[in-house]
Image (cartoon, rainbow, N blue to C red):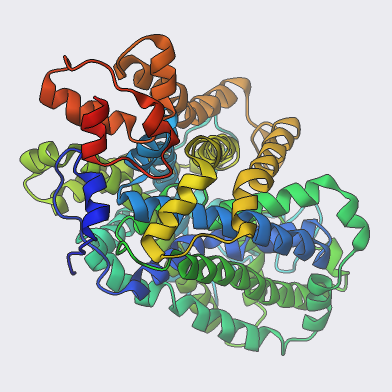
Length: 594
């Protein structure tokens, strides 16, 4: 790993901050691009995108999806990468720099990433469990002749509510040992517990050397899934009925476009898939060299992410066509649900394919790769943010950064233990519903307010010109100023209007469990008002001047640096010149104002 150096003009902006060690950069810029692809491309591309396509009329979903990619996904990713690369800090410090009043957005993104990494690793645990079981012949979910099967089990796919497939029973009874509800906790599933430990060991080995180890791992984890996806596609298109599934995927039902829900789902999918608001890509971009071409990375990451979703769509829908052929029913009548698509429906399709063990091993190894690089990106957010804020204290306690990362992984592992109990699937569903659906929309809304409106498009464009020599074109400036804030507001409003309490299949969580879900949601959202209160508390002057300073870039850094040097007795700053600046003020300017 090489230590990056920035131009003197750029470095001057950071002299007003607390002293930090020299920030490392990626050994090669392609490592960041691959890490960004690995972070953005995850399990959601394989199950959520095909599921939304299926539910939204197949090809009709592609129209709003591609439109939202252009006007929402690409501009907002460009915005986040620019802020991360320019400030060279994780989400907490970056948001505190550009808009002190909304610094809590950065803290909230760290909180939501940490909460998600505790239960997202459960999906990796399931992938490992299925992977290990895929080396058996026949596959254990291929027949009903097993000790965990019930009398209602059937070897053939069915839509009947009175029977269940061998694949469903393997997932529910063999792997999860699922209880009847969240009220019944059951016992620890020791197999899953040990595999969860293995999953966290894999995560630690991927990130313990920081961007040095991450940069090398992503060469494999980001690229190998495409080899498997292409191999699966070549196999699936040769299966009988595959063409019917592909036709359903690419031929639109135009009437579906009249539904507002389809458009909102398309925007939400772009949003969640790329990871706007999670802080992962912002943290990773903080390790870029100062003059890196952000737009090139933005286009490569976002377009590759969407192309991967479409490729996965062809793979999944060709398998749907094959299943509809076996059952003798139309593709539109298949029993397909969300995450069960990956662990119930698709394994069921494998069971009827030639050389089923090979395809099962390849598929679940692909899920492992997709999950790993998304997972270590979430952990990296926590590590980067804490190291930015408490570097000296953490090194004094842990001696080495590697030991601190081990501690973070250990704590996240402990929080994940309830998910490997028999009640685990309910805990997982509750956390996912109130984190990925509820919290992220609020975070995204306030992040856009902080960067696009408070910090301002003019400053953001000036930062980009300083780094690359070119300002963003009128399309991006218009999206940042008007289109994206309006779209996110609409998505947030419809998310609130259409909000439904968490449920798993036909099981509806009791009120007390829903209450716990809201506590989980508030664990991240609460930092936004708390951060605003803290900012107003520490800034000097009257309430009016506090409010003006709170939306002034770099005001907190100035207070921390200059007031510390002068003991807080130098008077109050004249913020009028700072506020009108199109860039972040340097130390000399700050000292003048203070």
